[in-house]
Amino acid sequence: MSTDAVSPLRQRMIEDMNARKLCAGTQRGHISSCKRFAAFVKQSPDTATLEDIRRFQLHLAETGVSICNRNRIMTGLRFLFRVTLRRLDLAAEIYHIREPQKIPLVMNQDETRRLLAVASSLKARTLLSLGYGCGLRAGEVVRLKIKHIDSAQKIIRIEQSKGRKDRNVMLSSETLALLRQWWKARPSWHDAGTPLEERWLFPGLRRGKPMTTRQLNRLFHEAANAAGIRKGVTLHALRHSFATHLLEDGTDIRFIQALLGHDKLDTTARYTRVATGMIAGIESPLDRLSQPRKRPSKSRKDQPPA
Image (cartoon, rainbow, N blue to C red; front, side):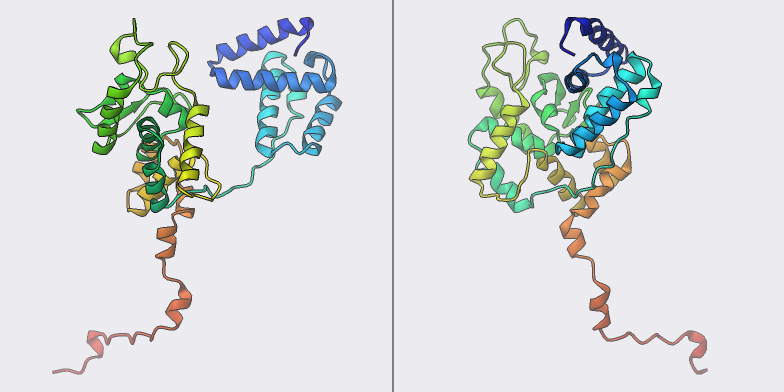
């Protein structure tokens, strides 16, 4: 939506999103989706027809847009037509494609140990240790403040993360030691005027802002390359590995669900498909066939009287 005629429409859509408390990232994604649609139809979205919706969805399929991105784009358009424009007929034409269910890619404990050992700096080691040791998302790691660290109760408080949810995660003694080392070395040029409790643990270059997830992602890939990890892992693999290793060690899946902040147990249960230690430890029925058959013990009533 790039013309002056569309500006009032965009403003109204922003107001609708603000009224529903959509986060800034979601709002940017919805606006971007609508701009992409407007560029395709070469007119304002408020003049769109059913045929325009159909052609746009065909266009996304033919140009090789991934299912995830395609669904994200259509979610933004659905909000525009259903909420802002009240065009329920157009919103009904939007469909989503079921995404293939893929097994999360995780690192084994040896790979994780090597990754943390070769981290290029104290900052990188602390960041990556928080991701793996606490199961945090990238955005949760970089947005940590002093007030979130509770060394007395040995927990880290995660505030208003994905889904606007708070949760607590464990604070291990090793993680606490790393945080204390980092606090001594942490740059403090932007701390002036900021209360101690509100200071970022990992301040960015811009005053009052934390470091970016892009910077954290770069540190992860540098460490993964240095550790010789050839599988295509991403930064989120630290969180996957956290859950998988806890599951393999026998931690109750309901505790893992709480630590990860999942609403549904089904979301956490997918880690049972990648817990290779547990899977490998299951005895195959084929192996049982080769074992000598156990003879049933005689029951008491079958025994001869004394």
